[in-house]
Length: 198
Image: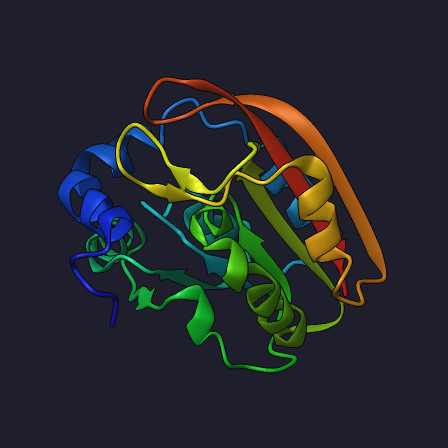
């Protein structure tokens, strides 16, 4: 189980109600629509870092078989209330399955992983996917690992550094792009969206 003294988990414990409400507002569902379009209806999907459960709910409503997970027990409870089903409390480094999912959705979640853990986590995701599986993740672009104004840890990768990490995994296809976004702290950021295929 995560330790309460971890500042990122402490933030999500403290802000769970407000963050779950905020994260459901004005969501740009384009990436999720693309993700769903790449998978067949009924495909098995793992969501890493489901937050308030909004994306898992859309996936379930569209007929996907979804396993929602979050590293924060408090956020998992928020998602459980929204989804009406259990949400697994799990850290990224606890993903242990092999060839279990057709898709892995990690929108704005792996950006909290320490840089040193990122490649091992990507290896776990690759192993968890079935051949042909699709993986989406997104990261706040930056120059150095550190904390934001709210005390949350971010890996803040450069575009080139992040590509180098992903290229250590034998994906059959890798696509990356930048776009602008606005975070919970109200600060505009450059977001790096990554699509990887097993």
